[in-house]
Amino acid sequence: MTAGARPPVISVMLAVPDAAAESNGWDTPAALGSRTVRVEVFADDPDGFIERAVAAGADGSADQIRDHPAPWGRHRQGGFIDPFGHLWLVGDRSPLGTYDLR
Image (cartoon, rainbow, N blue to C red; front, side):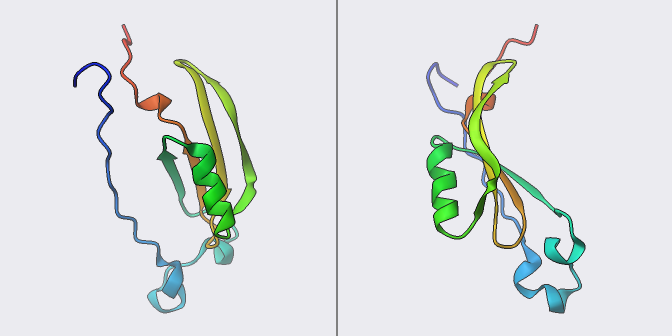
């Protein structure tokens, strides 16, 4: 990777069974009373990502976005709970950098 190049984007397809949970034998987080998955996303604009999710119906009170101290410096992250009960953590791309761990 050349200097200043952005790391590759990895795309993952998630099968979220909640839409038809009653017919497929999988329980929803609400039925279990607990989280069944945590989704972590790295974005250029984590604030905007969370704002759009909340505007679309997510609960933004789970983990207010803020700056976290990290071994590599500042990491901006927050979260929300989607309408199906899944926890999403959304942070900036700072953990995706390259580091000399020697």
